[in-house]
Amino acid sequence: MKIEGKEYRTIWYEGNSVKIIDQTKLPHQFIIKEIKTVKDAINAIKVMEVRGAPLIGGTAAYAIALAIQENHNPEFIKKSTEELIQSRPTAINLKWAVDRMTKKLSGINRDQILKIALEEAKEICDEDEKFCKNIGVNGLKIIEEIYNKKKDTVNILTHCNAGWLATINWGTATSPIYHAKKKGIPVHVWVDETRPRNQGANLTSYELNEEEIPNTIIADNTGGILMQRGEVDMCIVGTDRTLSNGDVCNKIGTYLKALAAYDNNIPFYVTLPSSTIDWDIKNSKDIPIEERSSEELSHIEGIDENNEIKKILIYPKKSKTMNLAFDVTPAKYITGLITEKGISKASFEGLKNLFK
Image 1 (spheres, rainbow, N blue to C red):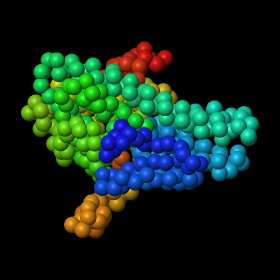
Image 2 (cartoon, one colour):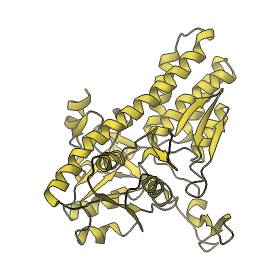
Image 3 (cartoon, rainbow, N blue to C red):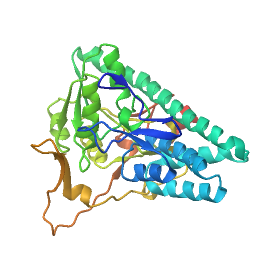
Image 4 (tube, rainbow, N blue to C red):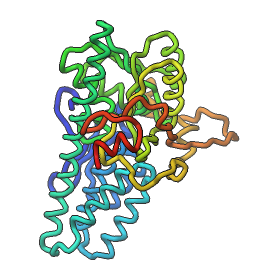
């Protein structure tokens, strides 16, 4: 998608290093950062210079290639893969990408392993871009149906950033919106700011602005009253891990949006590539829920009157904080899962019919 009129992907390999868009600097600064080593890649994942389940997966794939480029020693590569998997535990795409790369590289000769690793990492990224585009094509049908009934702007509420910045391109939740825009369907997006890192305000609104799609940032607790007023036609969110029973683990606050949508008869859709499905965990209580630094809650970053980026304390110094990064939305509150292969019910049978 575009930034300042120029087409970008979120990650690419160039000149013996990996290039990423540093998302911790958006929306105030657009910086392309060079990742030279596997430790650089692990750090980029941990501090969320790259984030979003599909992009984390793509970064992990390239990180393994960087590890091989740095040191062919099998023990070093094995240790690097273990550190990668631990860098952010909730997003299933990370482990999926590491496992896929490990399987692909098993038994490959030393003189060929880097070439094949880079090819496979690029294939993972190319595949994600294709899947996200297809998610958009499938999700467009829902937006079209609403528009054909309403004959007016379709108001969509989204949470966090499941946009192209969270994937390789297109995004998951935003892909149907981008496809609707290209088809001439008028859409407007309610963008949850998504505390504590404000990924909705900082990233989703930013990328929608770049694509000239009307959007309005709202406080995280505003969605309910908008639904009660009839100002939301549908909700679309992403997911960091979807269980085979249809339960969805996504950014903290997603569950509350689903409850509000359910109570107001608003369709609530979750978008995902198949790489985000966890076929192994059967109980959502077994999903590892990441707990991040308290500073993400107690401090906030912005631009001051001198156009300088500053981080300031907004809570009492003595106050304790808890910063859980994700919650789980039970399948019964989800209208449907929009995937690259089609739309299914949020159930084992629905997913099995598409993917098994």
